[in-house]
Amino acid sequence: MIGWFLARAARSEVLGIKLENILGKLCARDVMYEDYSTISPGLPLQTVFKEHIRTSDERAFVVANGDSVVGLLTTTDLSKAPRSDWGRTAAQRVMTPRAQVVTVDAGAEA
Image (cartoon, rainbow, N blue to C red; front, side, top):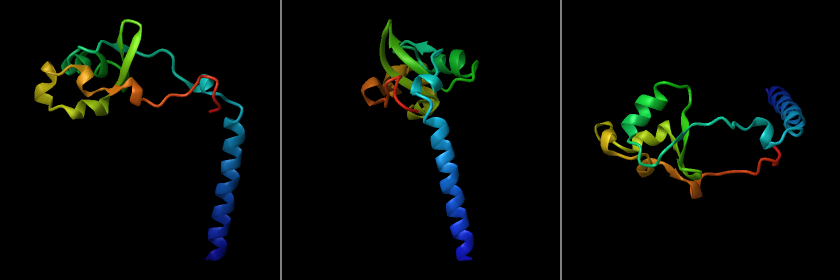
């Protein structure tokens, strides 16, 4: 039994090293998504759902005022407001503010 656990641990270590060798050659720019959709902060959640979520495979949307990013809205964020209020709840009320979104430099290692 102990041998089985040791073999599993060794296998996990080898897989981890292989993954590290593969990812070590990549930077964030190589795996980041640049063709993202934006929505305005005042857009009602009902509109976000009907015109963006329901019609695409995307599950996160950049909330922007012109060229200025103010936050990120995910499908999970919609659950912060009762569905009956979606027509009168703006995206900015439930989004994650830009200051709270974790980001990395495009040149950072993956």
